[in-house]
Length: 356
Ligand SMILES: *Cc1c(COP(=O)(O)O)cnc(C)c1O
Image (cartoon, rainbow, N blue to C red):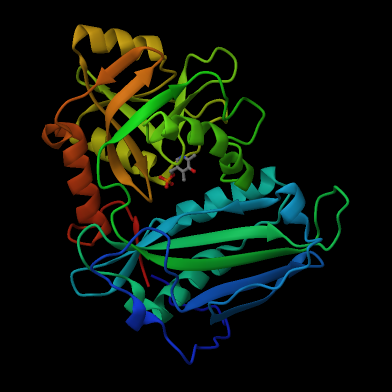
């Protein structure tokens, strides 16, 4: 493992807020660690990366991303290993995905030293903010925004890259109920569905608000042409266990976010000898399997939620209920296996663990 070679200047806070955190009752995304990494891009290159106390930004109201949404982000997690050292799960994969998002949004590449080594240095400084109880972690949020002071519509020339972190408890405490959406659309070929661009989430708020009012937790999006093939959930990829096969939508049409957890799940299931299919799957196929009694499990996968069992899938009047998620073989095995790797309790045979 490389050492932190990057020479990022550090200004430490004089007033750590760690004493204000109740590590036993962490909520997701509400507290931020003492420090953040901030880098500026100008004149075609990254300049002046530094780690500074977490603080508000001062930006002109004319800053472009406020208006036109040239903004992308990532989500990564750090865990405490059994020796109490922080470890980060697959940050290189998030770095690569960030740059795929950046290219599509006409934003500059973030160098690996800035993204990965900068993150390691930040976590090292705020290591006391990585909680150690099972199910907890330090959520890491790298993001990039366009910061030209110009309200004309054109690709920006100035950008900021920031990494902030937040101690997190378990994301969902209960199995999720899902509403299959066939009116509003999240992504279509040629669009930005495969990126973690801010606009993908902004546009989902209204449909999500509506289904929450109906008593559901999350939307499962369907394709933009036929409203028939399932894509993914708001912030999670989706898997269905039908018969002896785990099925997840394929990435072919650039409409689905290539989840790091999705890839980890596919890898682990295949190694275990389970059949995994990445292919288009229609809501009709799922409904038919439900009727036939072969639809056994459904779960979402993502960094924030890990493995989130789906207790109900509603499509129009069809309420498909899946009982007793705590007894499901595949998702519970995955949950445990992934946790063992992420918390460094099991040997890392895939090169997924990055030491700080
Ligand atoms: C972040 C995200 C995921 C999950 O990706 P991971 O890399 O596993 O965290 C899935 N779908 C969407 C839309 C997302 O934003």
